[in-house]
Length: 424
Image 1 (spheres, rainbow, N blue to C red):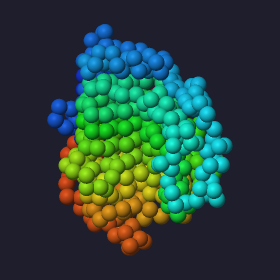
Image 2: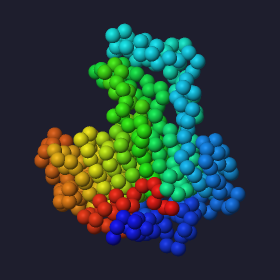
Image 3: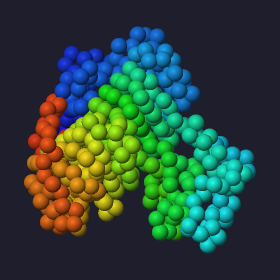
Image 4: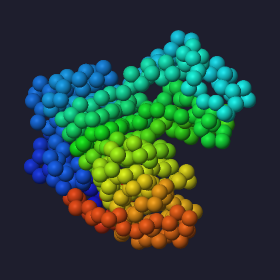
């Protein structure tokens, strides 16, 4: 079976409930398809009446469609590529802001590395940077209401420079969209971050913050035309203008990410954003997330990094390059199950790097293949990195799976079927 036939097969069985409409905007998450099918399931805006179905081609139209009708079921169909920063970064700059002045004022040989910039006044280069950053924040973030489906039309729909905020709502579906990661036009220099200071950026492509029943399906997340490899260095550090591609935080629950492509990025997916006890109170017992049939390609780390979450990752394909650091980050009180996944690692990159242990938390890792060979990822990790010994057995068994494909078939199935442009 070639890729064309395979795409029709996998998108028909993995993305639509039996008897569902052929219109992707009307389709719902199938029963038992990951954590987002728990309880009431995830239907998004599939029940929208005609008055709440919108087709948008501009950023202004998209934001207006999100706001229309409150939390009544709505379907927003995106045609073409919508750019939230089409006018360029300069359009957000506060009067008087000048990046060269910023570099001159805070160069380590001038400012040092002992004092952060928090107390800098509003008329300082840092104050003007803050004002510029606030303007960008207001412009590129879009709040997604409850009971909403956002779906791309055809093969070339998507967003550039957008940060979707799925915050404190229930029942959201995002499908068939390409997302080029937003760039932070005004990263902050923090002299006190590490021994030599660092640049810190904002804006995740999508944030699921305290929300429930969210399905992300057949999307592509990439740095696109602004890869880190093209970024300059200032003060000896990479001028980092990207944050994450997907963050699931602050007690979010019941999320399924299926048939997506995550590519060309550094810090990719974060589940739980802090080890602090104040955050843990809201995260314990939540952050239940399923990843299946996703392609993780050309990433550095966090695919995902997990704190507290009860995460099921199966039938995904991980393709590493020379920049690879790790895939699964095992964090505080996490309960990760990683099974039936395929890893394609380049020569010289050991399977021991698949896991990175940040905290002592048990992991289930069974029936995973590396370069076509069955591999006990925990045993390999513990043998080569004994200082970060992993404990086997996450203490739970996933039941919300529609179909588990044979691992040997996963690279071909996922590479052919994942990503935007597959749903017509």
